[in-house]
Image 1: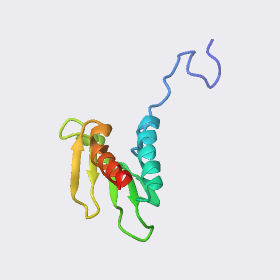
Image 2 (image 1 turned 120 degrees about the horizontal axis):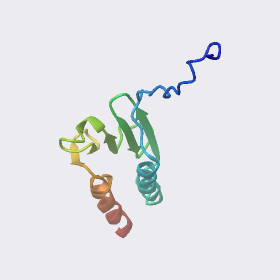
Image 3 (image 1 turned 60 degrees about the vertical axis):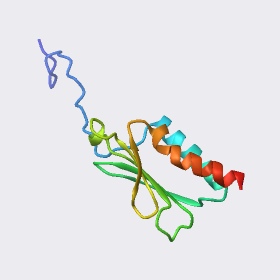
Length: 119
């Protein structure tokens, strides 16, 4: 006898949920916020914004809140097999670096930080 309203005792898999938006993993966000914190301490950045869409996740850092972002890091998983899912954009929207690894894409900002600390 089957229980009423049941599925006959069969185990049904939990329905898979398609991602409605792209996000950062904890490790990725930790690495990005670590750089942001060091840039704030060096007096380079004062504000940030994050954007999460179906296609990409973005972290933008600003010198002042009313300006264009001084740097923007984007994660686009759809480009993983091509030039890499990570892109670093400059203040005027130019691509500064693309790659498969977040650390290598953030390297130009790390070098900039070293120059800011030295002066």
